[in-house]
Image 1 (cartoon, rainbow, N blue to C red):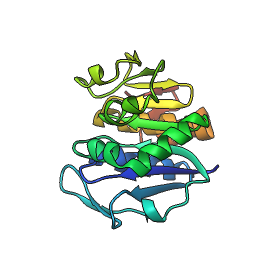
Image 2 (image 1 turned 30 degrees about the vertical axis):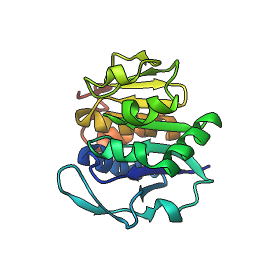
Image 3 (image 1 turned 135 degrees about the vertical axis):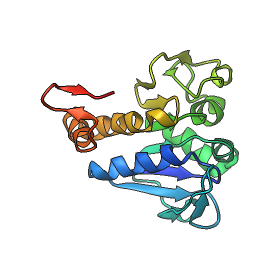
Image 4 (image 1 turned 60 degrees about the horizontal axis):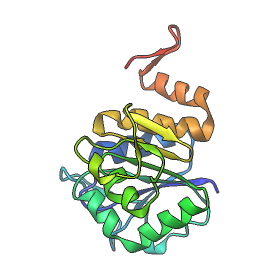
Length: 192
């Protein structure tokens, strides 16, 4: 299990998807973008069209290390409605696989599947009532076991670095953060 898959649906949140895939690749992590559409072209919530690496129906997920869900609307709703993805998420979760979701996706995609039951999690403000069986997190990025959640676009870089830290360790996450001018090695502190 060595590939991280980031799923794209029409209406995905630009920053959450693009910053995450960028940071994972900067860290040397094998990361693949996957369109749930019939084509590789996917248009974001803000009208940016990108070309995914693959199409869901043509992708073999047996080597999945992480399944990653950006938010955005209607992106998160489109992910939640795509049964092949929800079935994959449930199967991956039951096997103890790693899942990361940001913004609306924790509440709109993961919570209805029971993946957040009993887990500490965070989501975009105002969606908390959609996660009744999760423990409410109070930090912008929350890690609970094999699940990482984050609250929105402004935390996309922290979200991605949290995934890097879990895959490659804190030192690699710091190195990537320093390269992005987010981490100051002299003071040993993040700038944010």
